[in-house]
Image (cartoon, rainbow, N blue to C red; front, side, top):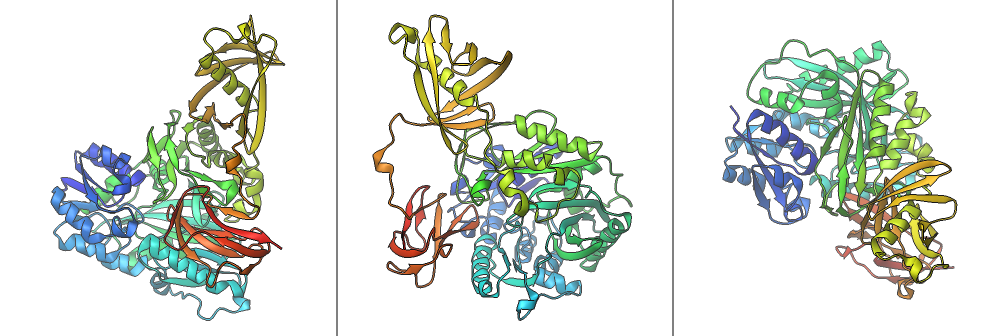
Length: 613
């Protein structure tokens, strides 16, 4: 019987596994890098072991170090979570060789399926060899891992070499394995997968379908179960193929078989030999705890002959610290306040006051709604996201709400090209027009104790803010009746709350200020100084770092004086396990290059300058 579990992972999934272990009375052990020294998963575990360093390759990807941590902490079992070493057969063997219980599939099953190239061979498929114009478009894909890392779509033959190099670099950084392959790219298909659960006694459960078509950078954003709009025949085919794949490798534990569905035809993609990020939607529909089932299977218990009956519909949204309108750039900083309304499930690795750093995936949390119907589940989740308090770095929250309410999604006509088609509309700036006024009145109340009308009774006060990418100036006036603004009547104001009457309708505004960052209800604004800082100017053509990160590559042969073309990749930054291309803003000459590979940069750092021709 398992008494103590070390989770060889971090963040949200570690916290989620600890929750089930706690319910079972199982002692929990966390591991953490130096960057995660105060992370939530280290605080909620019963014990925590340091992995010296910050880079994934030296910490969460070092299997020997993690096995030593398990032994030192007295753990008798290891759960890999997802990502990192979760699909590494050598790590699974090392855990077993150390006399520990491995809460996952046999190493042989991982070996057979964890490499996408070997998995395709097992299913009678093969990647492309020599790529020709006739094969385009193609997808360059990492053989190991998942989460959209190490994947590139190639539509022009001359771009293939650069895509292979970039994918190899990203895959090696994320998974410790730079192997990549090329396969045909199916345009506008649906990403559908089947959750399976198998025991050591020969029983395999197919736990329904999930649709994960809404993706950015090949990484899932919104997932749901069951996958809507599939014919009964296609659903049966998918379940049958998933069970066949599991039996082909004598699979044990939780896993997922993924397909790309085009019309009524299913194309096998891969088998993920681990728990998936989107497993909560399956748990909600089938009324089970997949982590608890993993523990039972690891202890040798047999599953019943058939799984529980499915009921209702569940949908999950991944909340990321990122800017969807600017190439999904990851965001960092302090998460000052994070609160979600009751009625939805929240899986997260963050809480108030935590720092969002540059070393790992920018996912803050997963929100999951379950309801009797799909329409009710979508409405419930969109409403919960809309009312959530997220004070800190910019997130994709507005994108998620708009996606859940988009007509193409609500009618289940989406595919993997959804964001390619609709991103511009979904990221159109929108904010409450009265938020700056509420912020100004709250600030005025907090700073004015004796009534400003005594000093300048006739002069309006003005404050400047940045909101949704625009500068806004608001004006208000101190009078003997209180603070007033044209067209709006102030009912109440204090430093944290403002009540305004607009066209006869009262509106409540909760105001929270963190230095110059202000949150008014769900609108994020920035207080601007009265006079611009003259030192903050840059010469035309300056390329500034859009995020903190590490310069991983500079274009081959690039040097000051080189001629460059608009859109030409100049260098690549790595942040939060993803590579981000920095391209020339115009055709011209590279007049300055301020960085080298391996250099750390902060937001706004000057990287290079292109003098336009």
